[in-house]
Length: 331
Image 1: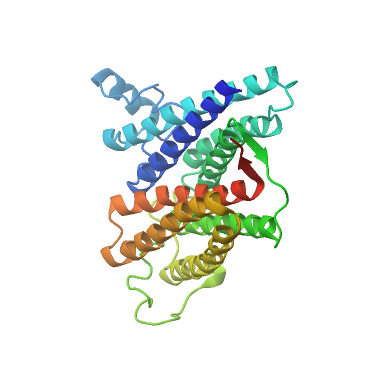
Image 2: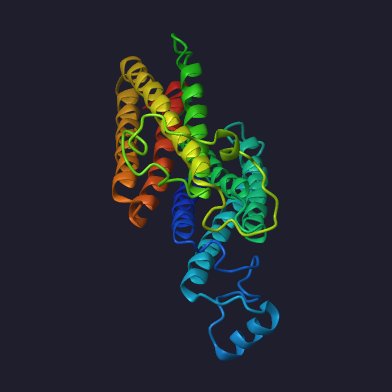
C-alpha cells in the first residue's frame, strides 16, 4: 500500500506535467508538428539527418519538417507514454493486492481504461487535424486522469479514515462544485481549441459592449467533418464571440458557487477545511487574475500555459474539498 500510494502521487505529478506540456504544444501551434502517430514522420524521434529528410520527402510529399514544433509534440508524447506505463503499473499492483480490503481496485482499473482511450484521442487529435471536439476531449481526459490519480494518492495515505456524514448537504455541495469546475474547464478547452480567447479584446466589456452580437448556434457545433485542418480555427468572428462570452459567464457562475462552498467548508470542517479552502481560494484568485491578464495583454504564451496549469490546480483544490468532506486524518 505504501508503494501504491507513492506511485499514485508520482503519477499525479507527472499527469500535471503532461497537461502543462499539452497546453504548451497547443498554444505554440505544434499539435500537427508530427503529422502521423505515434512516431514523427515515420521515425521514433524527429527526423533531422539528410537521409531521414529525404525519406520524409518521399513518403509525406510537400509536408515540411518544422523541427521545433515536431520536438515539442514528441516530448509531450514521450512524457505521456511514461505516464501511461505508470498507470498500467498501478493497475497491476491493485490487481495483485486486490484481497487487501484497503486496496482500491475500481479506480485503478478505470484509469487503465481511461489512459488507453486517452492514447486514442491523442492519435485522433493528429489524424483528424485538430478537430475541436477531439482536442477538448483530450484535455478533459488528461484532467480526469490527474483527478483520479490525486484521489488515489489521498485516500491511500496512512491514517486516513472515512469521516462521519457532515450535516448541511456539504457532500452534495462539494459534488456540484466539482462538476461545475469540470464543466468550466470544458468551456475553456472549447474556447482554446476554437481560437476564441481573444474574441473579446477588452474587459469587463466585450468589444466595448456588455453583450455584443454573437452567433451562438454556430459557436457550439460539436462536429464539423474532416475535410480540412482546424489549426488556427475555422469559425467566423461572431461564433468565437459566443464561445468567449460563454466562458466568461461560466467563470462568473463557478466563482460565486466556489466562494459559497469555501465558506461552508472552512466554517464546518476545522483546520483541515480551512487549509483546503485556503488552497482552493488561492487557485481561484490566480485563475481569475490570469484570465483577465490574458485578455488585456493579448494571450502571451506564458499566461496561456499558466491558465491551463492553474486550471488543473484549481480542479485539485476542488477535489480536496470533496476529500476533506469525506475523509479525515487520524493521529
